[in-house]
Image (cartoon, protein in one colour):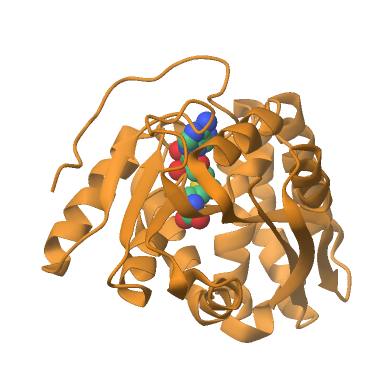
Length: 277
Ligand SMILES: C[S@@+](CC[C@H](N)C(=O)[O-])C[C@H]1O[C@@H](n2cnc3c(N)ncnc32)[C@H](O)[C@@H]1O
C-alpha cells in the first residue's frame, strides 16, 4: 500500500474542524465512525444514483477515519479509491482499519483540499462529505476538484444547512446549543448554512448538469439518543472553553427536554452534484 505519504500541512485552509483539538478524541472518533455507518444505506443509494459504480478512479475528499472510503471501495471493488485528509491522526486510523480488512484497500494521502498532490484529470468521481461547512475558502476547493476531475467527471458534495435542522415539538435548549455552534463556526470561517450554496458554487466554476437535492435524516431512523450524539452533542467541544463549559452543563437539560416530549430531530442534508468542464 503506497499510502503513508505524511507531511505536516499548515496554512489558511485548516478550516473549522480540528480533530486534535477535541478533549475526548476517542469519543469523537467513535462519533465519526458511527455517523459514517448509521445512514450508509441511504448514502449508498445517492452515490449509486450519481453513477459511482461506473467509475474507475474515485477520490473521497476529507475522508476522516476512512469509514466511507472503505465502504466505497467495497461498493466499487474494481475501482481505485483514494482518501485524502488534512489530519494525520485520522489518516492513521484509516490506514490501520483498512489493513485489518485484509483485502485490496484504498490509498490514503495527507493533503489540503485546496492544494491536492494529484495530476490534472486524475479522477472520474470526487466525493466530499461534511467538508465544505468547515472551509474558509470553499471556492478554492471547488476549483481544485475541477482540476483533478477528468472533463465530464462527477463531483458529489454532501453537507449540512442548519436552517433544515429542526426538532418537533420545539426544544429551546437544543436551539440554544445549535445557534451557539453556528455562530462560532462562522467566526472561524466555516458556514453551517453552506448546504444551499453548494450548487451555486459548482455553477460558478462552470460545472455542468448541476443539481442539488435535500436528503432528510431523522432521529426516528436510529433513535433520539444516537441521533443527538452524532449530529449535535459533539458541537459543544468546538466552542470556546467558557461557553463549552456552559453548554456541557446544559446537555442533561437538552436530553431531558427532548425525551420528555418524545421529540423527533430532523436534518436536511444537501447533496449537490455536477460534471467537471
Ligand atoms: C466532519 S469531518 C468529516 C470526515 C468524513 N468526510 C466523514 O464524513 O466521516 C471533516 C473532515 O475534514 C477534514 N478537513 C478539514 N479541512 C480540510 C482541508 N482543508 N483539506 C482536507 N481535509 C480537511 C478534517 O480533518 C476532517 O477529517
